[in-house]
Length: 327
Image 1: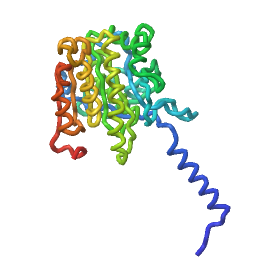
Image 2: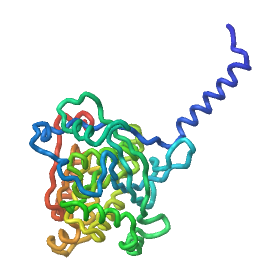
Image 3: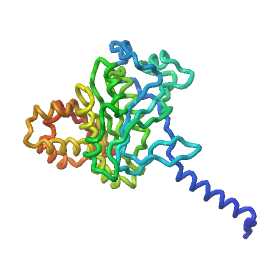
């Protein structure tokens, strides 16, 4: 049996180990995606979502608001600084610029492709940059105390949301809460797509909770939904108290249903003894939509029996008996 000379295999082994460690410890890259298929409602040409765009928008690059309780990533000269998969005791609030199309596509090109039944080419989506505007809470302070200390007049995030609402005829805030096994960028890009097909009305916020991105860590993600529900609850209060939003609508997917149902349940219990009309006026919760909710049926029913549905205008649940992921 022949062996490789030490001068060959030892340096090769060292290079392999260094490369392996580098690839597994690097900060997560900004992800790319392609625009979802055109919704059926737009394919007949009757609906025209882009006829009256707000004056403060200049697509094909738009700003999507985000809220995340992921830990900020470490600095690296090859990768942008944003958020990883670990939990953070504070809630970071900011804005991400998302570009529709490549450098050669104009807004007219993107608009045309967005309404096609069958596209001749994909419309790529990519986050160009991320800017954190403010934070809510920290490990060394009580979350509610940090909210009281925040001045809405100097909160950059609230100010940016207010500016966005002032430019829109529809004064609503939409929140998207994703499922498990996704990175920071996924909910931001999905929120951008959804807002795109809403014709850029109101303000859209992506809630990126710290899932771990591995199927084998599903149980840890389930625990994290309980952790992050407190931050989501306080975000709802923060938006309701400090913005002029008419309604706050929530769309959640898969394990995101655990976060939303727990947060709404806690808000309802906190309002024990307060009339439903007063709670609705204070919290401004509009439509709450659960899509393929990954939550125990009896747990959801128990929370519903505590009447958390009272604080929302409507709750809608979409399920599929053939959902292979949930099975």
